[in-house]
Image 1 (cartoon, rainbow, N blue to C red):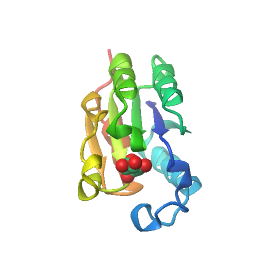
Image 2 (cartoon, rainbow, N blue to C red):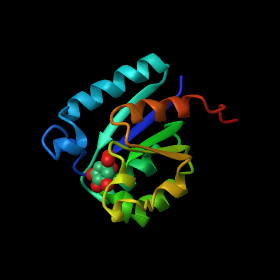
Image 3 (cartoon, protein in one colour):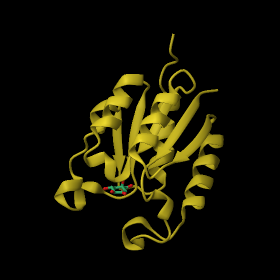
Image 4 (cartoon, helix red, strand yellow):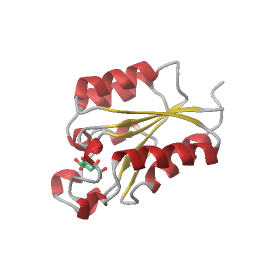
Amino acid sequence: MKKILVINGPNINLLGIREKNVYGAQDYDALCAFIAKEAEAIGVSVDICQSNYEGEIVTFVQDAYGKYDGIVINPAAYTHYSVAILDALKGVALPAVEVHLSNVHAREEFRHKSVTAPACLGQICGLGFMGYSLAMRALAALPDEK
Ligand code: DQA
């Protein structure tokens, strides 16, 4: 069974409180429960972590090396300026999919640029919780590493 690590960045833990018109009314626990349920349906094992600190996210990515088959990452605001997270993703070279709950391209211009997406297989945005499920599906469908 493939092992996937889901990494959520700053303020994702505030779901249900922050900007409900953008991120919806469901809270972070609901997101984690959704991810766990979808992982079971897809047939992958999943661990979920969250941090409001850039360096801790870098450490999550580094620690995934050798333990996980793929990463789903929502770097949140760090998406738009974290070279450190970009370098960590490139460094471990695990297949990764970037997810955003909101459609970043329909929002402020500074959100249109992702510094981290070039280190990922692809990016999913604007589909809410479903983006995490689609990202796990994409990782599950990849051929096994030799
Ligand atoms: C986000 C989009 C980012 O621009 C923002 O800073 C976030 C959340 C999203 O999931 O839509 O915190 O990554």
